[in-house]
Image (cartoon, rainbow, N blue to C red; front, side, top):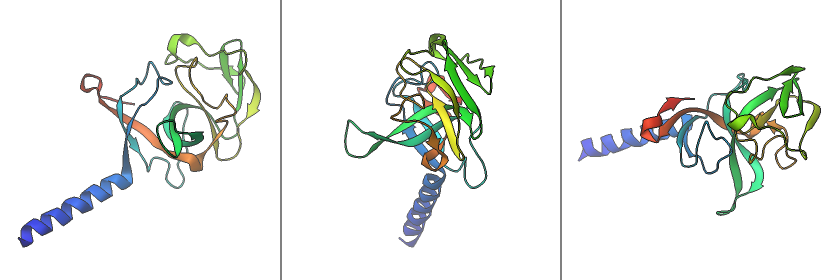
Amino acid sequence: MKELIKDVIIALIIVGAITIVIKPTIVKESSMEPTLYENNYLIVNKLAYFKKDHPGYGDIVVFRSDIDRKDGPGKKLLIKRVIGVEGDVITIKDGKVYRNGDVLDEPYVNEQQTQDDDIDVDSETIGENQIFVMGDNRDVSIDSRSKQVGQVSEEQLVGKAIIRLYPFNQITKL
């Protein structure tokens, strides 16, 4: 009996340690297509930006938004791609995204669609400890172009998506 109790305690400690480091996450919407699809199961590294590390260009991040959840109480977690970091100047014009004056090559964007006449961005400078994020499916993504999201504080970050585990035939590092 003592061995069983010992094994259970060790298992609980291991599970506790793992949940401190990773957060399993299910994609709920289509804003990251074609990179991620609804019901993809991801592993998010919660310690990716711990202490001194900052998000980098192209990182896929999960963060807490101020948008109310439709399926229950609380705020939505969003998953988006990092386009700009502290000090960058982002401009979105004529369907192209510019970072510090250079047009971005974005092969991950769904059908290369970036423009929406209502949400062009005119030389927005990214603030201290802030990031500018966008979904890969720009037609449906609510992201930093929107006043609902805006620039995302690094304090809002849950972590960095590192692995897609499901569907099993699409297991891949992100």
